[in-house]
Image (cartoon, rainbow, N blue to C red; front, side, top):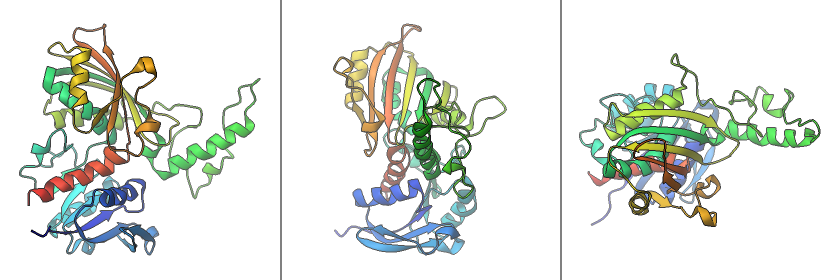
Length: 354
């Protein structure tokens, strides 16, 4: 039987996640009949390679979705709010990577390895979770099923790629500048305002110097003094695990790493869970690769997690500060499994049910 093929649109095709979506669609051999690359007017006319051919980028308009079967959105919440419902009205199934619809009760929020059942009865619009939430829940979901997690504390170490290409340029330029002016005697690591990244054409997406520094702010601060990113992890975790009262506390930090987020996670479970049992569970968990031989120097590193879809998990150990406590360390590619791959996997589940 001949496989059905689909017309696919990638919205935000020239961005970091959009580019990765194109790469993942190729690598996973998604059954594509035609591809439509959509972006802002600034990118109109650009050409991108896909499946051995050059394709022209088009300006995003409502009529862009005529004839589209699957639309993968990664162009920010404002664009999603404006165009995703229109894409659905014109017959497309939308997988949206922004925060626009994640907490909408009518919209499934899906990690395919964790809650594929949430897709049942969808109304044409599916939300892709935040990258940090996805990376954390790949290992935590199977542990939750085994022992019932009742509390999560997480501190993230997030790469600059999570803030986009301009943030990556900021890290690169600041690092060069800092190394040129550094003096051991005076510890002059601070990069001054004449940075290339201060050029208004480029901008500085991060609120402080990131080279040789860490910034305990990812996204904007809210009235409760947490950041929007931290509350995303709290609320999305509860929705995906279907545990509305689950205790979750997050501190999100930007670090001078180009690609892949890492997270230090502490969990408290309802039932006892030994380190050995947790290792066995994670060794067989889909989307997870156990890297846990600390005595031999083997543990998850962002430099190893980058470029692959598995989330790396290690440094498993008991947390003696609470009853039934366990600590672990996680690294995952925020552009792939944290965004593009998860979206394409959702699309694969959707077409497999048609």
